[in-house]
Image (cartoon, rainbow, N blue to C red; front, top):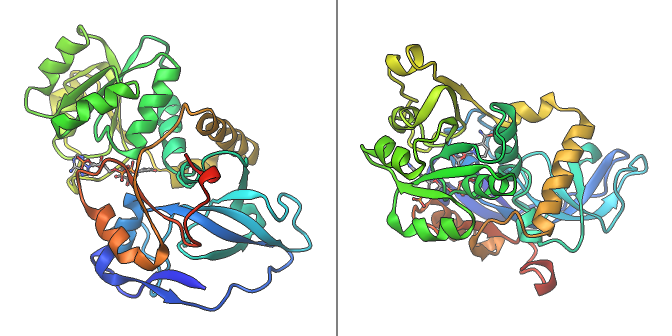
Length: 335
Ligand SMILES: NC(=O)c1ccc[n+]([C@@H]2O[C@H](COP(=O)([O-])OP(=O)(O)OC[C@H]3O[C@@H](n4cnc5c(N)ncnc54)[C@H](OP(=O)(O)O)[C@@H]3O)[C@@H](O)[C@H]2O)c1
C-alpha cells in the first residue's frame, strides 16, 4: 500500500514522500476499512507538515485532514455502514490508499454525487455554514464581508449566502478574481487596499454590515472593522498572513466591534451526533444539487505527492489541488 509520509517538519513538498507501507489488515470488531478515492490538500495540511499548526503530530507522520472513499471491510460489531457504502473520513492521517478506522470516524455520503467535491465536504462547507449561522442572525437582504474570498471556504460562503438571500462583499488580492466570483453569486468583489472601507460603503450603499469573516488576520482586520456597523462581529478562522489580528481601540471601544475565533475542530465536538449527521446530510445534498461547488485546478496520483504539494503551496491558483490515491476516478464519479 502507498502512503504519503513526512519524517521531519519543513517545506511540505520537500519533506513529504510517497512510500510503500504494510497493508492495513482486517478490521477489528468495531473498525472499518476504507479504500480512499480522493483527498484535497488544504492549508491545514501544509501548516501541519510545516510544524506550524495548533497540533504537532509525532514523527514520522501521515498527513491528511480529509478524504472520501468506499467501505471495503467492516468488523462484526459495525452497523452504521456496509461494504460498498461511500463515506467521508472524519479523523486525520488520511493520505493513503486504504484507511482503517473506528466505525464512528466515518460518515456515510450518497452515491451519485461528485466524489471530488465530497472529498472536500468535511472541512470547508461545514466551516462556512457554521460561521454563517453561529455568530449573527442574518436574514435575506442582510450583508456580510469576507476576505480570501476566492478560497474554498470563500466559495462556500458565497454560495451558501446566495441561497439564503444574504448579500456578500468579497475581498480578494487580484483583479482577475472579480468576474469569476460574481459568476458564482458574489454581490460585490473588491481588491484589498487602504481605501477598502470607502469602496465597500459606496458599493453597498452604506449597508450596515454585521458580520465579517476573516481568514487572513494582520491589519486587514482593521480595514474590515471599518466596513462594519457598530456592534458587529469579526470571526477570524485562518492565519493566512501569519500575522496577529489587529484592531484599533476606537473600533473595539467606541464601535463595539467583537473579534472572535472559529475552529471546526472545537465546534464539531460540541454538536450532537444527530446534529452532525444532519449538517453533513444537507451539505452533501447541496453538493448533489450543484448549489455547493468548489473549483479544482488539478488532480494528482499519490506517487506525485511532491508535485501536488508544490502546486498547493503556490498562490494565485484557480482552485483546489486533490489527490486520487487509487488512480483516476471513473468519469461518472465526478463532474
Ligand atoms: N478555523 C477552521 O476551522 C478552518 C476551517 C477551514 C479552513 N480554515 C482556514 O481557512 C483558510 C482558507 O482555507 P481553504 O481551504 O479555503 O484555502 P484554499 O482553498 O487552499 O485557498 C487559499 C486562499 O488563500 C488566499 N491567500 C493565501 N495567503 C493570503 C494572504 N496572505 N492574504 C490574502 N489571501 C491569501 C489565496 O489567494 P490567492 O489566490 O490570491 O493566492 C487562496 O484564495 C486557511 O487559512 C485555512 O487554514 C480554517
